[in-house]
Length: 269
Length: 162
Image (cartoon, rainbow over all chains, first blue to last red; front, side, top):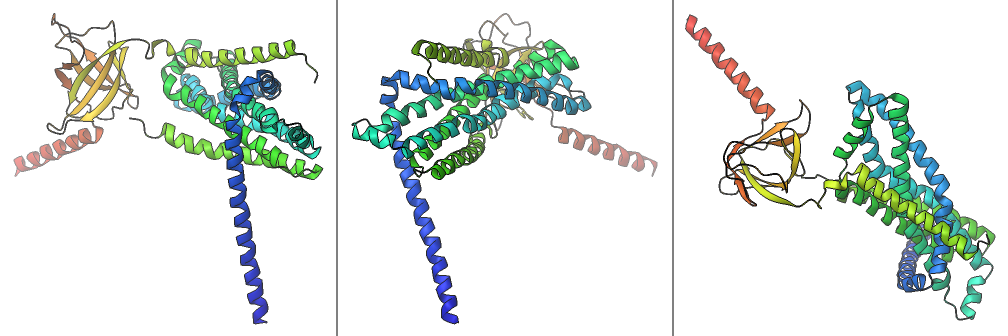
């Protein structure tokens, strides 16, 4: 009786230890993979047409969802912001409220989440399927490095696309807020723009927002190519890897956003 | 997807161009980059007994017009005064007897520095010190002083009747 309990306890401990070792080893493999991809950077830029193709797939084809989401997020922000601001007689501050929330937070974060689910999942599925159908092994046999030919262009395509998509998201959001705030509700155009220009600083708000979007682009692209490369070469493995990309990218974006915000916007002056 | 090279290049080019245009729009129209950094300026120094709620990057205004920004705020370790460095846009000159005061726009508004030029023919140069300053108002001190005065006059009045 007692020995059975002790055995159960020991095997539970063993399982915890085994899982920990697996996770740490996985983390080490992911870091080594990330370093290898970054070392292949010249390959992505010496064969520019491959990277261009990836910018087309992850950037241009994501435009529709990014632009439409940005427009609607901006319009909703304007409606909700106006509702609260007019209680304090500060409806003219709508411009600065919308611009700061979009440029600092919502632009990079929401565009990053959309990018992870629209482009990141596609990258993982593509690389995972290449692995499952042994195309990657075939490349290796022909002395073509799959990291240089397949992974690096997708990685860099994502990094280049992401800040541009985030900036477009913010721009469309501000345009949506302008439509609702000025055209629909009837806030004065001059007050809307001048409050925005007085409240938004280029270095502090816009550059920090762009830095955020670049960091999110690196995180999402790296997770997407890694999960694809690491996928089990079965149909189920590819589907699991795609799910993991979306979940891990979203968590990474939200976590990184908190860390970056602490460093960027904490106690000025 | 069998796009040929030129169509693909065109789409990527459009995407990159529109993206860069969006960043430019944010910088110029939203962030109002026009008078950032690129406008050359010079520094002035002002010593205050108390800066109240003044923060770095607060605007410096003369007659309500923004003429510069607060660059840094330090404490002078010997005189225990606050040393505020102002960055004034080139093209604005202030007289040597200018008064710098810490003001608040509205009851709950932002704190800024107001410059009131005098009639001195000489102008402040780069690194110059604004001689006359007026400290910020600390609301708690004001209320405390008001209550103290009330109490003092009240006890004097009761003392008088005795």
